[in-house]
Image (cartoon, rainbow, N blue to C red; front, side):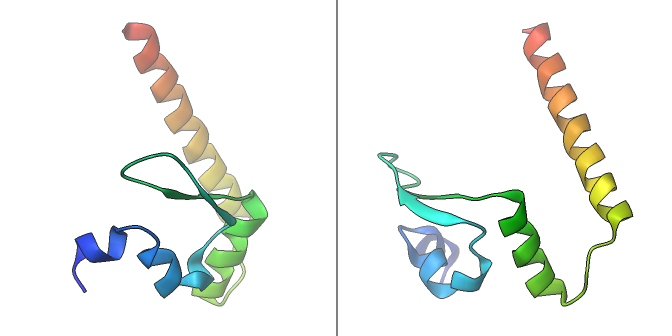
Length: 81
């Protein structure tokens, strides 16, 4: 299966249901008719299932700090426009 076939419609979700971090819902988007809405707990569940080990508090704090840095950079880029 090539990348285009894998990303088309609901193929990814059907092939890897254990990697869905939330609940699927349909959209009116042409390119992405199926989206996923989930919580932090859903993402952590998928990460734990893949790694088979617990994520330490330090790793979570680092991930949150990196996410905040990305948000700040995006906000600064918007201000420059």
